[in-house]
Amino acid sequence: MEHTGTELRRGWTTGSCATAAAKAAWLMLLGHEPPASVTITLPGGQRPTFTLCRTGLDHGHPFAEVVKDAGDDPDITHGAIIRATVRRLPAGSGVQFRAGPGVGMVTRPGLPIPPGEPAIN
Image (cartoon, rainbow, N blue to C red; front, top):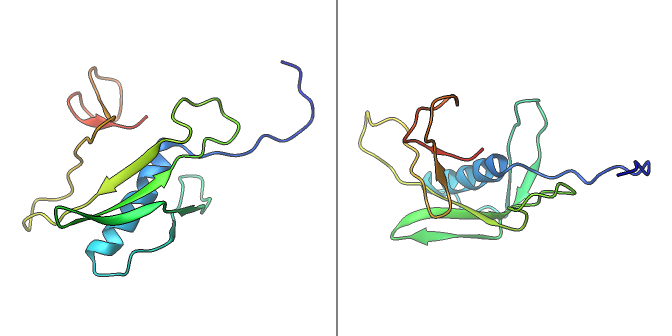
């Protein structure tokens, strides 16, 4: 493909969208009103803002959704709804991640998380 000199439209990773959705749901868990958008900090220091397409309660637990925008990257997940639901666990339980529909599981060593854990990568 020949480079035409035009800049490609930036998109966001599935993990960034999931982080934004989780932050919004967490804010709701803390008692805040459902936000229309949230800003996250990326590893490189960028601070993008994500618009939420939906928020609410799922069996009493707050959730938030973001529509993935992959920009000009030919990503099959472009337009997918990325949803995060949060719930309070007993004290001392730490943070746990559970895979929802469409989230893959690590099957072999090699990622920073062990096999059997959910992964968005």
